[in-house]
Length: 327
Image (tube, rainbow, N blue to C red; front, side, top):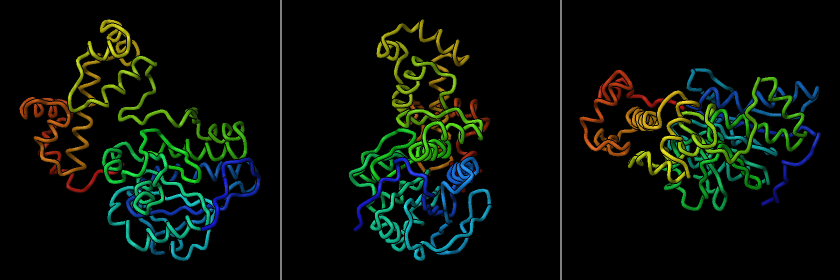
């Protein structure tokens, strides 16, 4: 096995990259991977990245939008410096022995491997994240942690660990690509690339992923939001949240009203109902278990709140969504 080269250091030569695109991946995650490289090349006036598209078998990959991406078969990829795996749903179906062997083969050449959205799951299935901190899309974090106990699972937006990079979804993928660009070509150049997309969200990768975003939060409401997300199944009383944050319930109420135009209680309820909708549409979990997992003590209270929030009963919504909803 060749020793890995550090691709995250100043370097003006084009980074030889392969983008492994799998069926059922999110179109936005695909674009978030490729467009920063294209933009970097445009701004630099030369090739900052030289990339090829790769698919599992050589047949075009079909994205969730129906778009198709042609590429060479992974088995034909001789080598690269960076292999980016972009995946979405049907991960168990994609994790074939040949695909996992292909990932291990490329890793054995000393290449850096990156996973986006469902990509980290496939890297972990191949044993390539053992001993590394890593993340994946927030919907899958709990299952990911259970499935791969040798991976140090983080809820960060993206994680860099030596020659492994993992990202939690489309927007964090942009941030991860900008991180690579900044490491190789400087922070100023990365900011110019971000500016082409009117993107001003470059920040620390350790920022946690969130179900509802955090654009209007201040430090206090963001911390309260994180406490709420960590306790969806057993909701914390508002007074306990305020005490944990060293403030008063009244102050917390004021900050939520000022920043988010809502109350902490309603914000908490919307978080729970957003998770309930995800469990209804994306899993086969019994509806009573969905109610309990999102902090409802009775099926009737859950049913009323769900219908009010989503305009449909949980049972009807599940019938309408027999196919998985995509990230």
